[in-house]
Length: 88
Image (cartoon, rainbow, N blue to C red; front, side, top):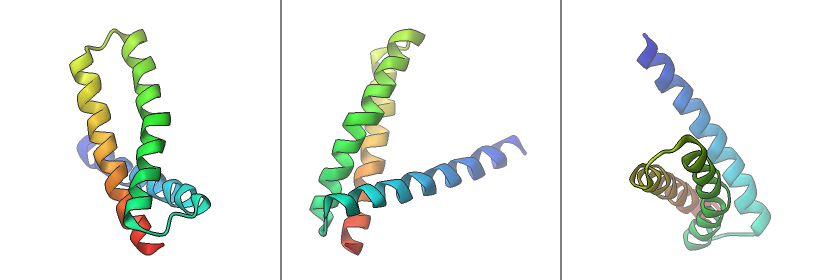
């Protein structure tokens, strides 16, 4: 039961991320998959990687875990950016 709630929450959070990323991509005027990917990469590096770095430092997490977590987010956001850019 707990796993179902976690998965449902993850889906909702992903939809919110995609919606906000779409707004950002649109505000940048990105109209191609490449442009969408570039904006998504900027968002990920500018917000996700920096926030995760703060968590890593204060929570004493290992660098390897940081790289895994941020790498996953980079791939996720860039793929979202490509799809959203295609919709231009």
